Image (cartoon, rainbow, N blue to C red; front, side, top):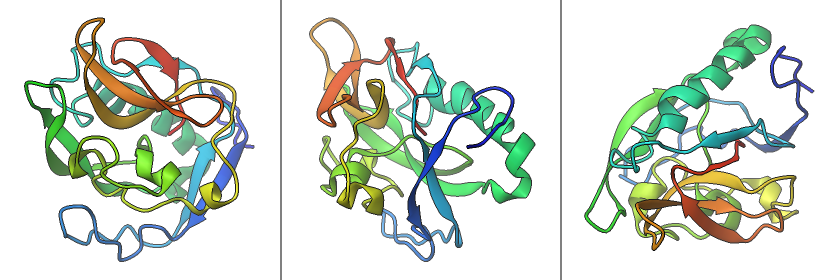
Length: 190
């Protein structure tokens, strides 16, 4: 349990040293060192993925530029320097069909998972731009399925959705893949 004063949630260890000397989807190695990958056991709340129709990919999304930095600042109150500022490769653009079409290296303390981190199948959205540096399966999901309390956002772009605008992948409470409009409010599990 991390009592950060805001979320005060239980977290699950999903893997150890997953980003030490790890090669990302673009072929580059950005060593994030040794460490523990944690996922909150229950959603940190309900949040919009992006209010601007995911035009700048995951990197430019509201969830990445505003929501997750707030989560990180709260966690730093307890974890201090143990919360690692990671090198991350995030989708940075989308094409006319609303699929990720580019990525960029940047840094982040907290990120959403890729579909492959849960399923072990990569480029399982439309392409490698959704995977970025998150192109390894988290060992936790070799032993259990995603079955927590709320539908939760992932980082991958789904494409154009019939109800208007861009869709984004997520996981249902039973562990199945699904999508929703990026402007919808859903669970947060960085």
